[in-house]
Every structure is written in structure tokens, then in C-alpha cells.
Length: 134
Ligand SMILES: [Zn+2]
Ligand SMILES: [Zn+2]
Image (cartoon, rainbow, N blue to C red; front, side, top):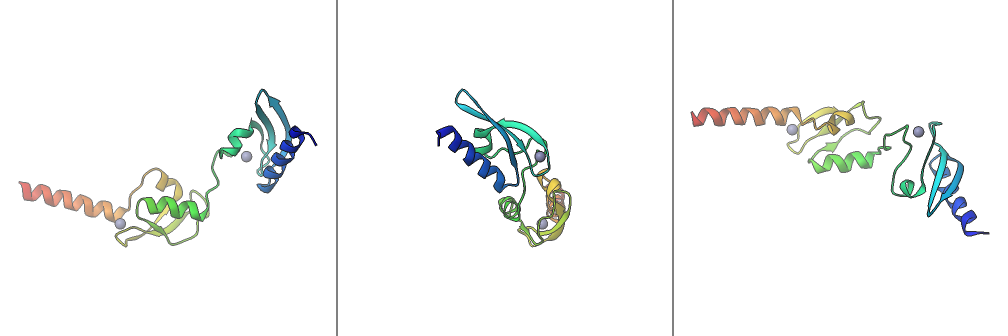
């Protein structure tokens, strides 16, 4: 088997694991350009190297988010998700580092929405501080 055939077989396998179908693969200089059909039936082209770097379907354009991703991202701001992730707009119950429980969607989290109760106490603190100063 030629190297090229072997690489293409490898690509085909990798795509299959994600529910994608490899339609064609073209060698362009040192790069391989693949034509794919993603698991949502979008057909497009991309470089294999980009796929390997973690890029996915341009049409879907949303990285598949898993519970682990949510946990990791929430942990960065000291939050803990208490419910499983469904999709980016579904509200899930979570807890901040001050043990406030609240509902937030992944989309609003990504927009930088803070915990409402924390924000309120922060505001109260600022106002209190202002009063003391006066
Ligand atoms: Zn797609
Ligand atoms: Zn809070």
C-alpha cells in the first residue's frame, strides 16, 4: 500500500469515528485537502492539518461541547455545573464559589454573564463603600 493510500485510510477512519464521511482527499503540495460530509450532512472542504488541530465543520461552526468542557470552563471562574449540559441555550443549574445556586445557559456564560447574586453583593459592597467614604 502506498503512503498516500495509507494516510487516506487513516483520515477515513478518523472521520468515521465522528460520524463523518470522507468524500475525497486531494494532495496540495504538502497539505491534504479533504472534502467531507459532517454528521449534520454539511459538505465542505478543509485541510486535514486543520482537522487534526481540532477544527471541525465550518457550517456547524460550533465545537461540540461536552459535560467535561462545561465543568472545565466553569471551574475557571469557580463555578460548578449541577446539571448535565444539553445545548448552548438550555439553562442549567449551577453553583458559584459563594455557593449561590442559579441557572445559566452556556451561551450566556460565554458572553461573560456573572452570577447575579455575586454581582448584586459586589454592587452593594461598592455602594456601601461609597457611603463610608462620603
Ligand atoms: Zn456540519
Ligand atoms: Zn454567586
